[in-house]
Structures are given as structure tokens and as C-alpha cells.
Length: 106
Image 1 (tube, rainbow, N blue to C red):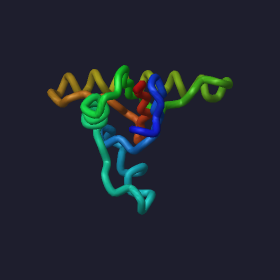
Image 2 (image 1 turned 60 degrees about the vertical axis):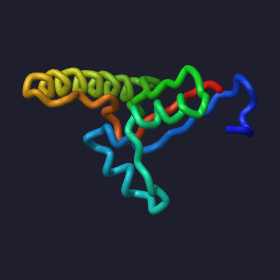
Image 3 (image 1 turned 180 degrees about the horizontal axis):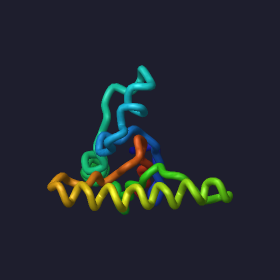
């Protein structure tokens, strides 16, 4: 944290233990020793002095037609699956994708 200047931005992409699909990201690299949830990484960054911490899904980006279809399918999947999780009394994951993006301002 000392090497990041004041008002600097920390950006990281990492496996997310919130996701029901996290295993494909967490266990595909031997260097992954610790897998955080979005809540843990949020509070950890806040505790060490970061502000404006944002955690994002690593979902499809609609930059061309095929990806627009994937983007819409991903949003519909999240919507219906969240409804199903709520209906049967399970918690809804904060992050659906195997990886998450973390953005924090110092």
C-alpha cells in the first residue's frame, strides 16, 4: 500500500469464493493459495485504508453482437437464478462469476 500514491487506484482480478462456479478459477493455478469472498476483500481493503471499494462481476462485455447475446443471457441467468435461490431460502451470491474485479481508491 505504501507504493501506491495518494488518490491512486488499486485494480485486481481474482477468484471469488462467493461464486457457485469459483472452483474453475480457484483451482486452475497452483499459485492460488487463498480465495476470498467479495465481502472479505471489501472489508480487508477498507481496514487498511482504501476508500471507494467496488467489487464487480467478471461477466461478458457487450462490445460486439455475439457478446451482447452472452451479456443478455448472463443477466437473465443471474435474475432467474437469484429468484430461485430466494424462493428456496438460499442466499443469493454477491458475485456470480468465477472471478471478480476489485477496484479501490487510496
